Length: 349
Image (cartoon, rainbow, N blue to C red; front, side, top):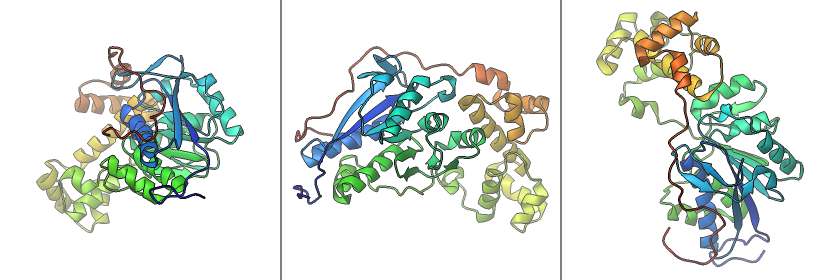
C-alpha cells in the first residue's frame, strides 16, 4: 500500500458508516463515536470515512438531552453501507425497533459490520445479531439484558470488537472503540493523532472496567471494607447476612459494623439495602421487567416488602418510578449534523 504523509498505510477505499439514531439516544455516546471519524479524515487529509444519520421518521431524532438532530433518511433507506452503528440511550425497551432491526439484518446478510453504542446493544440482541458474538452494554443495563438473553455472551468490558460486531458501554467509551477501529484499519499512528485532537490522553483497552474504581466512588481506601462492598454489589438476588460478609474478610460481625459506621456512616445491612434498591431503580427505569421480577432480582421476598423499602429510600413507590419515565423536554430546532467534513480543512477541533 502507498504510505500516507503521516506514515500510516492508506486504505484503498472509503468506509461508509451509518449512525442509526434511536429516540432518546445518548448525545455523548453518539458524538464520541462520530467525531473520531471526522478527525481521522482531517488528519489523513482525505475521506477515509463517509458517514450519515438515519432515524425512524427520516427527518429528525431527539436525543435524551432534548437536542434535535437532522438525519439523512429513514432506517429503511440506509442501504449499501459498510458499517451501521445503533445509537441508543434512555427507554430503549419502550420502542419495537422493527424497521431498524430489519435494516440491520439485511445489512448484516450483505456483510456489513454492525455496531452499537450505549443501549444500542439491546437492539442488536433483539434482532438476533449477537448470537455467537461477545458483546457489552452500559453497566446500568447489563443485568437486564443478560436476564432477557441468557444465551448471549454479555460482558462488562468497556467495549467489544468481535469480528464484525462492535459494541460499547456508551459515554466516552464510544471514542475508545472507534479509535481502536481506526487503529486496526489505518494504523496506531493515525489513531493516536486523532486521540490527541480529542484531548483523549490514552486510548483505553477493551477489557478495562466501565465504572469508576470503588475506592474513588466511596472515597474510602480501607481494603476490607472495599472487599465487602464489592461483594454486596455482586450479590443482589441472594444477599448475604452481616456475619457471612464479616467472615469473608476475617472480621467479627461487630468489627465489620464499626468499620461501616466509621467510613460510611451506616450499618452493613443499611448500605447493602441501598445498593440493592439503587440496582432496582436502574432496572425499573431501563427495562420493562415486571416489578415483582425486579423485587426478586434484588433480593426481596415479596412485592410489599420491596415497595415499602423503596418508598422509605426514594420517597415514592416503584410503580410511580416507572410511570415517571418520560422523554426529555423538546429543544428548539437547531443546526443539523450530517455529512462528512471535507478532507484537508484545518479549522479548530
